[in-house]
Picture 1 (cartoon, rainbow, N blue to C red):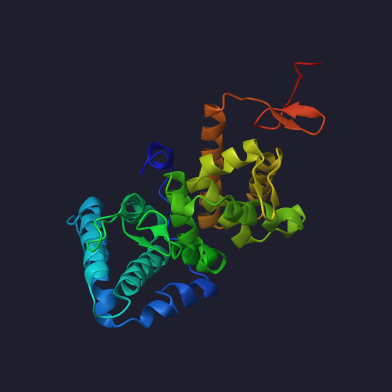
Picture 2 (cartoon, one colour):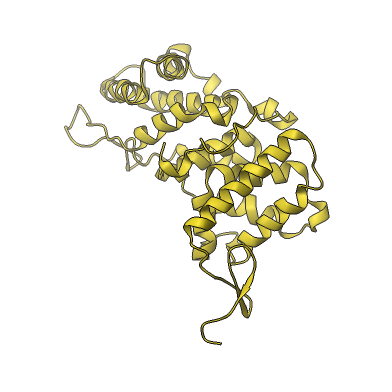
Length: 294
């Protein structure tokens, strides 16, 4: 995990409470369960063993998966062996990231990041293996299945994709997801109407991907659902500060403290560079500063 996602300076977060929707989606997806056990057990065993034990390491587990990928590409039986292999790997990642609390996800994050960097030689041609014209493993379309499910998958999953995006795993660097969770969720709600789960989701993004959030705000990134604005960062801070007086349970209070600490750290790195808000300029804490043109 990169320095940007090193959370050692935060108080360790407790296990996230599982909501009703999370309890229904915390195992592998239905399409994964339809695979023949032999088709899903081999990659599943490698990845689960990596999570439970010191050996294999994430790098060693990736080597083993890549070897299986080449073997699946060479296999004539069963039909679609490579598709089944991909589904086994992706389904295992999906199930594990939803059932594993964020502070225990580092090996899975490292494994997924390393896997996305690998290419596989096609044993039949000697060229880089492709599937649906996508290089294998660097840009497989099946990964979008994970992204599409993020709204129902729960906070463990959001923490997982946030860490991956923060670690520059291209599979999971999607500004649209962050915009949905941190802008659209709040756009039609008054401060007093923002729910506890919405606040916890915002905290999860800010704890595990503060550089991504800050970067999209500063760059005014355009997504298909809308564009980030300069004052989105300030609004998030205001929402958390307001919510500290509303949601008093220990878990949510701890998440809000960690999220605000992450924002503070990003602001220190930014050296209080002004953010333009309307016709004035404000520093990252919301204090009005003089415009240089003024």
